[in-house]
Picture 1: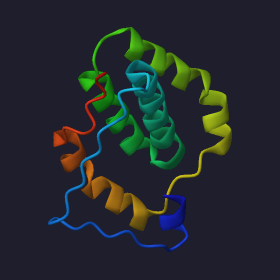
Picture 2: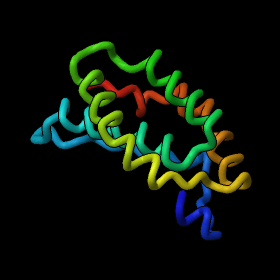
Picture 3: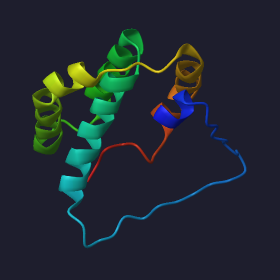
Length: 115
């Protein structure tokens, strides 16, 4: 998003589908924990307040209610002083693009935060 803010473009092609299969040698729970924490940090660092609250609420409703998710949320909260110090919302033109992706993200099987 920092590159988009600086004027760089990213194109989405509906006819292009990319599948990623994570290595079986990696710690699935650890990856999920860091991934969820990073999603929260990105949301809080770059999205306007209303969008950040909406995305945080969506995640709270949809991630598994387990120890890994709880630890990820705790990790994210521990970083809150840093997040607040570094918070730089994207400009409206970039936020509009992020907002346009929300429906597809909510329906994506790729972002279910399961391990």
